[in-house]
Image 1 (tube, rainbow, N blue to C red):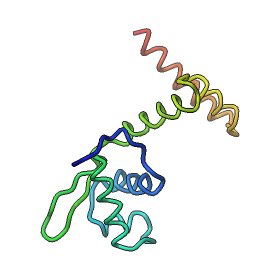
Image 2 (cartoon, helix red, strand yellow; image 1 turned 180 degrees about the vertical axis):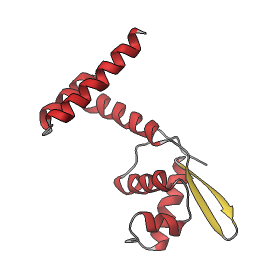
Image 3 (cartoon, rainbow, N blue to C red; image 1 turned 135 degrees about the horizontal axis):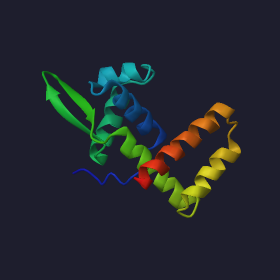
Image 4 (cartoon, one colour; image 1 turned 90 degrees about the vertical axis):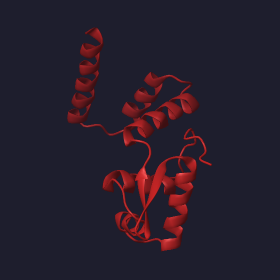
Length: 128
């Protein structure tokens, strides 16, 4: 039975999900190739099964292999992760999260301009 997707992913699980998001879907072997092949086949199969149990991937038997595919879009997970981070570390205040990001990163003028343009676009969109 699949657990709720509200669970956050471990670092290894996230590595596998990023690989699946990149390749779209694939067998254990395809995922191994996408992550650089540094793990044993059985380890990769085990992590994919855990991801399926958590509801993050689906599998379908094709010929003699299981083909795994993401059950959640990357953007959905990114949003959930940022909300979780904002809630747990910044008291649910996204502005505090953004302020910390801007304060702690070595942002170039180009990056700051990109952020400003993203915010300006959002403001225009909200103003209708």
